[in-house]
Image 1 (tube, rainbow, N blue to C red):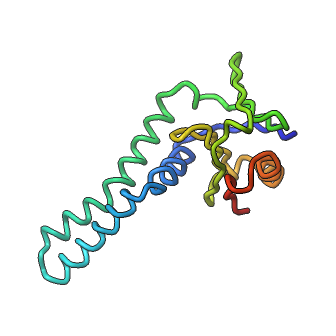
Image 2: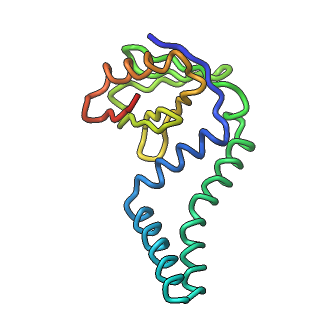
Length: 158
């Protein structure tokens, strides 16, 4: 059993949004096409094409940052810390008087970034464990997730 309190901020949401967005092949292709347009545009002196390529490359990360900052600032759920409890039954998240438990069977996958551990509870949402806030509990969280989920659904790097 592992318990921890975390406060999700704009940078944590941005990290999640980057991982989620660039996990889709279409967004990776768009970035590659944008980079190719920049290189080709500069090489051939077609500067309007280079500018369009630059806009394609920059658009997605910038809009993700803006959306993350707005979400963190506007949603009440991100104003106060969340209390996480991981045990053999699953993940329990509580804040104030509200509590929600997700069984391990309902967790789709667990992945990591350099900043966070992400436990996906649906295709579009995840529980975010910021490494900086977990501190010495990071290894315990990883161990708890790894021991309660199927190995083919866990891709966490320490």
